[in-house]
Image (cartoon, rainbow, N blue to C red; front, side, top):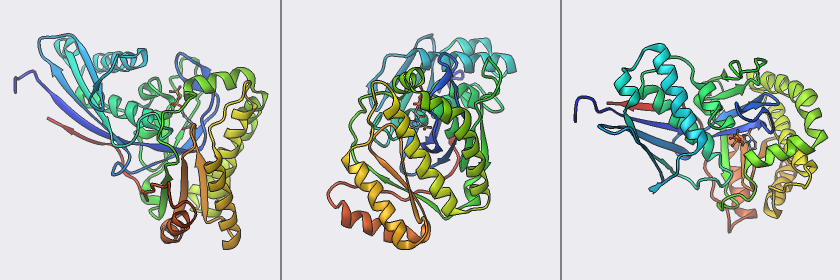
Length: 341
Ligand code: 2P0
């Protein structure tokens, strides 16, 4: 290996929002209309992995995703530029290192752009790899946010809140850990892959249309979400699963309600998603307390939260009800892993 060659590999997990982000107050800087709260999964099953190598003698940046060369998007280049600027500010890399080209290779171990938060894992991984590559210290969630909003929550493990902040430049719109994964180690997520096709309405486009056309979104962002974030934080802190479950389901439903309130409306759920919702409510009624919670993002796939003791029973229920379609995994969590050489 040449002396000025460096390699950094990073893995980052997906996060699932239990209080959803949907709508921006600033499109360019990716500042959200409301705070959101998520659960970061383990990197064991759903993760992005990114390796960055110096392109010695070249200034070119190349990027491949799942073995395919990709065109560099504005957001991607911005993430690189922001990391280089931060490294320059912190004086952690030489001018030569900062000018050197990069070969960036990423892969996801799950279908990209299918509503499984691939961009969240992808940008968290890219920026964390760049952070280590350029030896930046401190929180980079503000940089990750500018790559893809929800990605900033994947920077931390466990239960994470992304603050919308108040600064017009977005400098205080960062992610913070509410509690580490170890706080609630019994928490599990079952992922029901209803469809692994690329979604029809991208989140970026969908939330822009919602912000422009839905009055319900304004009420949600200004009034309902702040209350809900406080209730959700209290439920997580107290490990109150019944509260956690009800708030999670209500917030998922409300997110899809604002999608329906968008004009023209956006439909992310399909008939299988609806059947899953019904199944969960019937099961919870039978148990006498919320034992499983569903949450759906910008796609028909379901994320079911439950506690470890119930995983086998719930998995059996899913198999019996939806024998032909489900791929499910039970996941706890851990923070981003990085190796540098
Ligand atoms: C979330 N989603 O909180 C919500 C719930 C989808 C539904 O954040 O434009 O890919 O890159 O900031 O982060 C998806 O939005 O959008 C999303 P951009 P992003 O997880």
